[in-house]
Length: 427
Image (cartoon, rainbow, N blue to C red; front, top):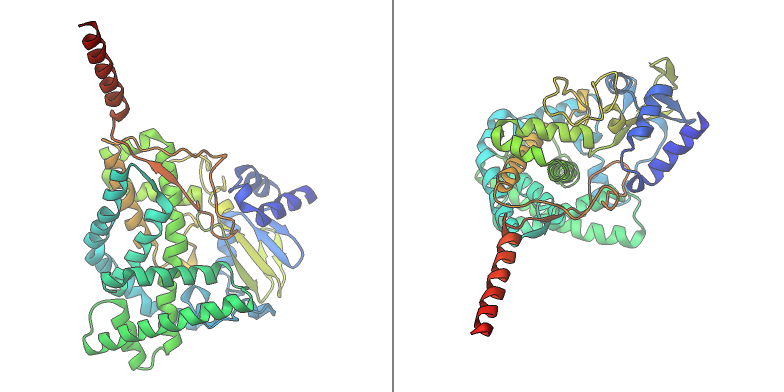
């Protein structure tokens, strides 16, 4: 058991070196689906994690067990008020307000916009025949989608992308030094001012977008200005980490499995199921944590009040007690209730949106693969994975997309030229 603890500690400290090791997960499932590390319990079993997430004695807020939140910057304090970091009635109240922004009706309204934006980004990338999937598509597309939900003018997208990156940096490095905090706060002042400008415009001319709904809710006293800003920050934060990582692991699967593009062209309606299976197997969000406020019995163990449960979603998504042949990529599997989007009260509101975006990207790239040779020069050994433990996507994914037959035509052309030259010499 001690060797298992050491192996797990090495993975947590250096996840990029050993991306989601199935062998470690299998050993955890077999020997310790709840592993005691002192004040921290690492929970890796599917049902055990569901038990923790659904128990009223567990909360998101670490201060409930005396652990201070990292909120030294003004942005950090707003991040702490995001919906995924709220608990109880406060969380329920805010989630009801946000639900309309991700309703099936609202998603259908922006479906064509997502397809058009995807096409506008993908077409020139494919034509260039060489691009980085992460920087050139998986980052700008989620920002564009968030802008669609907020009805942000397309002319402002570049500015908003910069602020979205600011939010992501704050999430990934919450313990920034004094100089970095000062720089973050200076940029955040501009972001806050911009959001207030949008709110003023929507107050005068309300629409069906999330900014309009939030502006109205603030006017009625249901939320305050920090709540409103936290909603906007949440959209960009979730987009730039969860969806960016999700797109990277999905396209990684597409490039590594030649038959997958053929399947998507033959059955384009399966694209969302394919993307969903990529999320289960790739687990772009590896883990989350819960503070334990009362003793919680889990899988034969007891999480003591005052402790912390580290929930390994990536391991639970490969739990053989839940998923048959869990290490196999199987988009047709009947059991799809994985934990890549969380579970229970904090299940990701944007999950249907992520599936829509991911399915759109996979369909477009699969269609392109009929005429282009899509590949990547990187391998499992050379892939550059996130160095953050929580978010497990690729940091870069170079893609080559020459037209099929390009190499053959070039060779044939060279041969023809050589033949013509030989004939001229003989004459």
